[in-house]
Image (cartoon, rainbow, N blue to C red; front, side, top):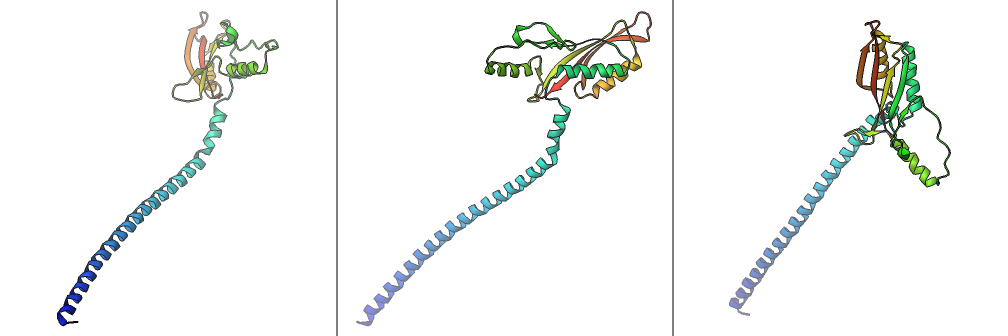
Length: 220
């Protein structure tokens, strides 16, 4: 092989090696870029998981912190509209302040097409029915919501209005009436008084009779 030919061979070999070097560098760069992109994605996922773990830990702390609120709400808000119990509590509070009541009444019930108001003093049982158990269950479910009104913006909470009228023949003093109101507002079944109507006694202006509308909040 002549020196000239050898020179061309060496030059060609060098060119091929240079091209191979460029191709290899490009391939390595693409591979590194691909791995860097995957690493960035995995890092982002790791950060997202860390954030979710932190949020979950905070949520668990909040649940533990406020878990007692469920029990408190259940103890404050009755789960049934037990009218007999409501009447008993109102009558006992009134008696404690020497107040005689003429009536404790509830809104009209829509069950069975009844249009008469239900009085707290009327606790006569309904006659037995031979209806099927499914119908009885439906009636029982409907009876829980009968006479109730939904409370806006508080899901699952209903209100039952109770009308309390004092005995017109036994007027009470203003101080006794105020004490009676205070105890009603601290009772779990009659926590809100929505309407008050007062009428001074004709024989003594220091005495009065009254008519109240109470709101009993229920979460059946």
